[in-house]
Length: 228
Image (cartoon, rainbow, N blue to C red):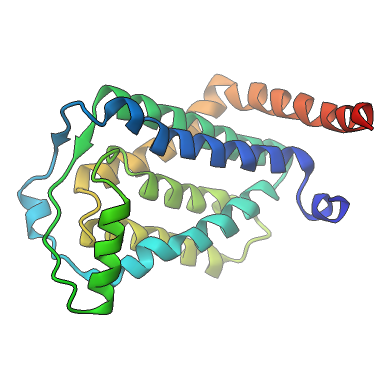
């Protein structure tokens, strides 16, 4: 454990664990309360013009590697910036939870014949991931946070910052070409990421969040010694 702390502070480990927990509760937990409610379909004529491209599921699923790497990079910044980043993620996930509860959404997915590998992967995705909890898109939200995570870090080379923007946009496009989301989901996901990042700074929430995480982290060793 000591070796891990050297390249990522303990309080940042706690922030990452909290982020994963909030994401899971938001996306999967809310379904318990909304699965029998009416879900709104927000697709429009523009969405209907976007083609279904099965191979882009590789981007849709492969983005998890991008997320893990950039969130770690986001946590390796100066403490003030890192806590602003992670507190914004926390606020955004809470906002998503409220949206999923208050305004359940869905969309219409294409029928898949599974004549190719990518179509089979798409069919599997459709079977395992219900067409709900779409607005805002957590895929787009998290991918844009990956851009925010590195754009202010002077130690990150410019080529990687540009690559992160490209990857984030690629993920956003993949949510549309796999018919997992519609345009308004994408726009709201990106807007929520930027809005949350601005809000936690202006409101002082990032400082409160940092104080809470730091206090909890400082008590963890004491609890381990008490158990010993």
